[in-house]
Amino acid sequence: MKIVLRADVDTLGHKGDLVEVAPGYARNYLVPKGLAMMATPGIERQAESMRRSRQVRDRREKEGAEATARQLAAKRVEIKARAGEGGRPRRASSSTGARCRSSPSSRWARTRCRSASTARSRCR
Image (cartoon, rainbow, N blue to C red):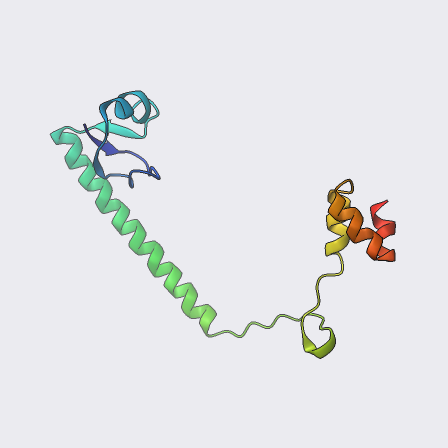
């Protein structure tokens, strides 16, 4: 059965696409949920206009994204972080505490907390 999609459906296609699906899938799921319409000559013409509007919108979004990428490419981004021995980045000091507080009953959290005296006080 031929249908025209009224919205993007992950497994089938995009809004305005003319697709062939099983009759039961169309009647029982797609049409009642408003995701598709049965294909008729008039609806197929309407689908063509849906596809054109989607192409215009996609083109406009792509141009905007490219303009943003050009602006960001010209800038320098610097992120300051604390470094340990040898200049390697350190792990966040709160990561152990956050894990322990979120799941203090887990075996992993108790094991981690027993190994560090400062973290132990945060977990209990």
